[in-house]
Image (cartoon, rainbow, N blue to C red; front, side, top):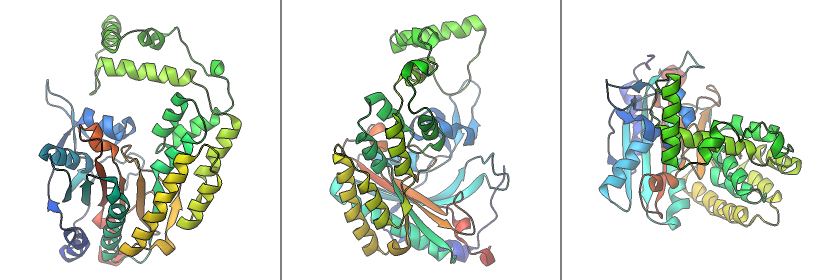
Length: 381
């Protein structure tokens, strides 16, 4: 496993300082995390980047790939309505396509939980500003702030008047460029020409209850002499097969809808100009999109007041992260010398994550993480 070099203590202290100044409680998280839970919350695409650990006869776990999920669980276990938590520690993520990247690296972050929506724009601004000050403390002069919004994408999809299944599938693909491109590529195709096989295994499983479908899948495995591996149970795998078959049979985007989506995803400009371009695409059924744009008017004001470099920021409608739990604002702090694939800091809003973990429906959550080594100026390493 490739590990990062040590960071000079004085530089690390300077980068850490903005996080500590936020008045958050310092917390840690277990090094081993439940594999199944993380895949459910962060997305199956993350599996290839995880280091899986399993004792004989035990449940599958993985080395901690991130702090957000375990910190959210800690917050909910306490039963508190609100809270702020700062953390610092090693995380572990494989980089199969980048053999020069460390797979064990230091991460510093902050997670904020609130009980009401009124705090959201101001909370977003606070998190972005803290991440920006911490990145600046590393001494680099080539930083840039990039903004996006998964909720804006979802609101745009709602305005396209799609079938419920197609709309839900596109929203799930918000942070997955390959899936989005696949949907765009099949635009205009009739449902019966998309390779579905209603008589196959998935079609049989679809007619059964989840429990019965799981039992049938176990029988198929036994007959084939297959010994399944991984953290997924047979009932869950069966339902995934059913959903995949349903997706193949679902209607595709029309050519006009696909063109509208392409125009939306191509928007990248200064925040005010980008949001104006989004507004220009709003149709007669875009009430949710117009409301989301109004939230951004307040958010930009808060960001400016908090000290974020809005005048020089970029807004990209296609900005997403590797973790699927983000459902609102997303942001990255990049360095020109590192390129877009190696952001110094990433973060955003993930109100749905606490709810999926059993928290209250009105939960609000936003946070960020930063890689201190990447924040360092080249001559300070």
